[in-house]
Length: 363
Image 1: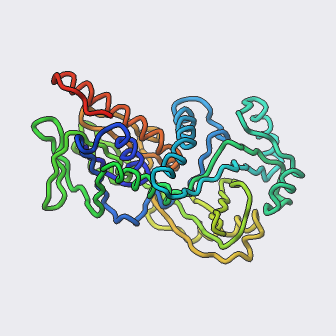
Image 2: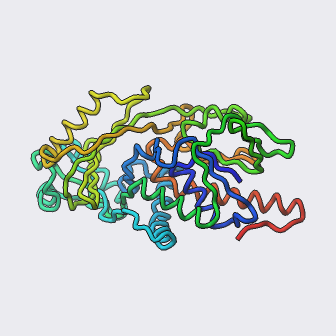
Image 3: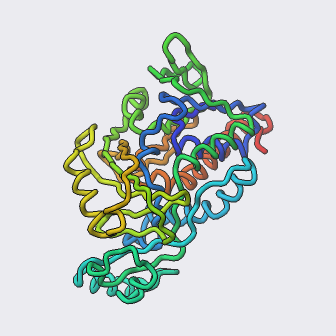
């Protein structure tokens, strides 16, 4: 069993598979082109888990969001117990600020029509009382989704990897897969420079690296990059996560605040003007940031399917799965993606083993 990609999605899949398969009997390998601390899409994320505030409340994507958030509530304590590592996971909810009267009217109408669970309206006075850091002159009310969450992506991904390793999963970094070839048995041969690996089951969780690898499949997948940029300030803020005009304000427990991230198409490098606009508007919305030292800024590329809705979570054949193209929701949807891939894999292995007249090596 080989997983290509050790970002948050690939790491979550490795962990879920290690819970249902015995790595001693079915070895699980994870190959990652980058180094262990080199982050791409995972590093671009702020870990904002928006479900109850989502305006699209029907269809596949919303069902995935709901299921993934439910898994987070059990997964975080599970990982902390297994690894002994505390994962920053904020349970204060998310507040969406309305900065115009028109937005407030439309938002209240949506709230009345949909009545989403755990979402309440805050008047401008209530926002001022509970969220004093926001520029009250720009506040026309807010939604507070007490059930939405935020997780810090890198510690979360590290915990997934550690827990998977403890269960016997092997991770190999700086191991780019150059080419895929079908083996005579129907599995795959992975070319890694001078080395080749034979695997019966292959899961591509390779983000932007998916497109060239899928050339060997019956149908290729085109994934395009969408750049995101973010800022970090030294600032103490004991508030829920706030979002206004598409800008997230994420307080962290170690005296930092994240702000971002931008959505920039058709570019691989950061646009200084877009970052400056983000910085300027963030200061207008949260004046406390005007005097807060800027400690770092970063960017990352998120994979977005060009010809189908995000994400791509599917079985190609009895030996091949895709888990990629999560766009802006890689962190949010990693747990449910892992569950769906793991379930499909064990069902396939059980059926394959049944045909052979054996006993499936499933825990």
